[in-house]
Length: 160
Image 1 (cartoon, rainbow, N blue to C red):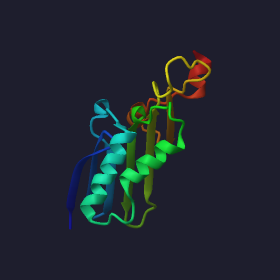
Image 2: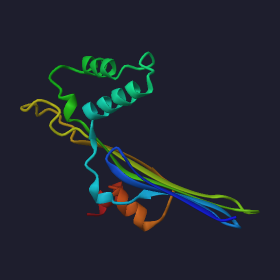
Image 3: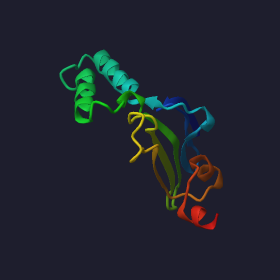
Image 4: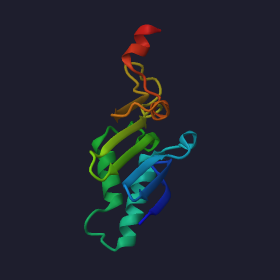
């Protein structure tokens, strides 16, 4: 039997495509960005609002209260920090699995997350202002995927 299942979705502001392909030899799975330039990200406020909305729709309000979570998060940081201006962006979500009967399964992945904090601290604070935090993990050598990630490796800084 051969089969193909696909899905398009948006995760943390990033357009993602997912494909499952069944063949006579095995199966393949691909999760990849479908339009990496379209990522606006999502603010912490919007993220918590969405969580609250989704929880409300499940009818399980006792488990997690999104408004309570938001208030606890705001209480945990100094009041002069603008939590609502923190933006989370999923820069890259890539997963490739190639499984053939009688062979080792090939697995590649790459994930990159940006947390944009520019403007979060009040104006006038010059001691430190963290503009962006990026976390990336990968095991692939595919140039197209690595380009999506926009990696700023140490060698890039040292060579230039």
